[in-house]
Length: 161
Image (cartoon, rainbow, N blue to C red; front, top):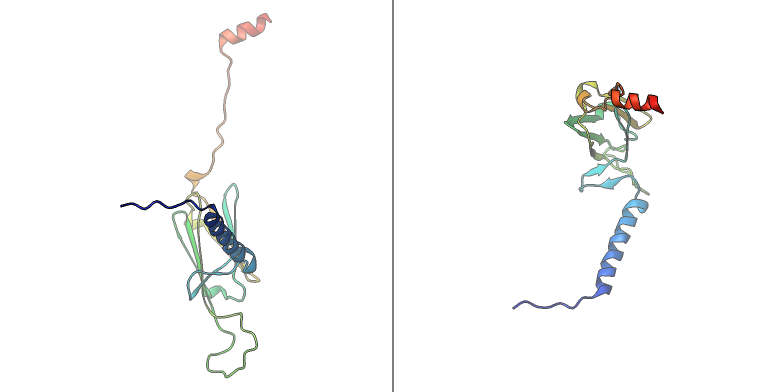
């Protein structure tokens, strides 16, 4: 037999309150870097569209270019990197604060249009990876010239006025 449950608007409001608190904590308390799993971080990105394609900027401070890997598939870009510890594991130190760890970082961005993987350009300067992703030529907007000619009937009516 099915049970009837009484509607409790306060219970719904409390779950919304909890969801808003969690969203606030993720957005403002720990801006940028968030943890995907216990071993992988996500890097903060900026993505914007131009007439030629997309521009992506990824924050990867302290990483060497050889520790960064870019992969593309159709309209998806994945950036992976590896942070290395500044203190060797075998060194005996007395940590006072340790917020900078070592490990993997990964970020995947799916774009609305397919990108031309053969024409991607990158630059890495002061911890910021800049990526230029041109879209496939067929995906770019094209301007089509419109030629006009007035129909004879309209031209005749225009001459009468």
